[in-house]
Amino acid sequence: MTTINFGSTVTLKQAAQLIMSNPKVRFLVRGEPGIGKSTMLSTIAKALPNHNAAYMDVPNMDLGDIAMPVIDHEARVTRYYPNARFRLHEGKPVIVMLDEFTKGAEPIKNMLHPLLEVTNPRLGDVSIDEESIVFMTGNLLTDGVGDNMKAHTRNRIVEITVRKPSSEEWLEWALNNDQDPSVMAWVRQFPHALASYTDGENDNAYIYNPRKQQAAYVSPRSLAIASNIVSQRDKNDTDATISALKGAIGEAAARDMEAFIAYQDQLPSWDSIIAGPGSATVPTSAGACAVLVFGAISKIDRQSMTPFMKYLERFDMEWQAAFAINVAKNPTKQSVAFSCAAFAQWVEKNEDLL
View 1 (cartoon, one colour):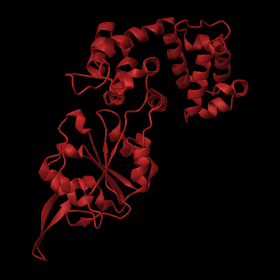
View 2 (view 1 turned 60 degrees about the horizontal axis):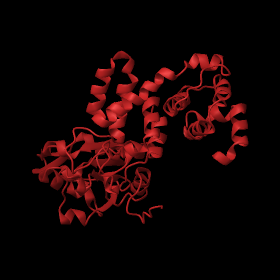
View 3 (view 1 turned 180 degrees about the vertical axis):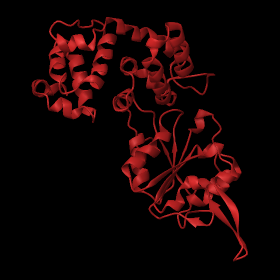
View 4 (view 1 turned 60 degrees about the vertical axis):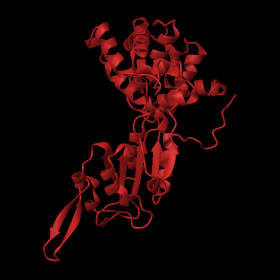
């Protein structure tokens, strides 16, 4: 049965769009740890190239990181000069992200507070451009990681809750951000690795759970770390790889991921696939098929696309469709796929699967 959201949560993309389309509104984006809240600054900056991006790690800021008093000898007064990190002196609108604002020290929050005003938002004595954007991030109160905010601040802002990305959403991001194919394949096979404790997933050994003591857990952030570890596994033995993965995503996920990526041993080399698409070995396990399909998306080019499509025809239809759907979503590989006659023929023949 489908759960009706009724606007209780939004995706990261929806949150970014709300922030961009409402520059005079101060949004506080809440979500559980490691789901990508901090990445919204780069997303918004790419969409608004005429703005400067300014990242503020609020819990680690001191008063001097915001503004400093300077003596104006001519007027015989003191003024506040904003820190250069806010980029207010560069003559362009700014996108200021107050990351983890709800964990900041009270004196720091007080100095940043004028940025939250609806009329004449400012930092010290300096007003910010009306096209500038200011937004904040923080964790859910149920995360239990020390977030708090006073009532007069809440009355100036709009809180929105960002949900954890689904496995499909994470895979779409991963395909466009050079994540290791084995990690992508593991997430596809074990989508509950990106479930959320807020959905009642209290027995899920992979995920963050504020009711348990955890040294590490699976999140979009820790999966990106795991991807770096897995991509270098040929330089380390199995015990070292598992140890590193345990520190990144927790013991349960680390051991399962290591066992899963052992499927790599079943895979033929890329050169043998392209040279002999009709004779190269086709993996038999679902895990190996997943690794090969997601790995192929990052490897294909205009020369190898046609022979790979011939090889792919020997796979079960589930994997053919998985490749077609995901390569079509990849902005750097779309043109390669759609310029290939073999791919176009496959799409025309199997459009009911897409």
